[in-house]
Image (cartoon, rainbow, N blue to C red):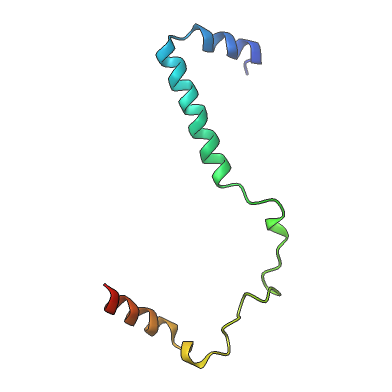
Length: 77
């Protein structure tokens, strides 16, 4: 593995266009790996006891939600 100084020296030895590509690639990697990081504390959520889960369980009009979704898709599309 290169030291930071070796990495900087290698970067500086590249032509300007290649340096620009390295910078773009670093930005791409930062974006890619920060988008998929869970929010802090997100892993501590207890979904089983969360009130949001199952909030429509007693609604009779949603008993067959698949048929409802199919009907909405048919009329809207």
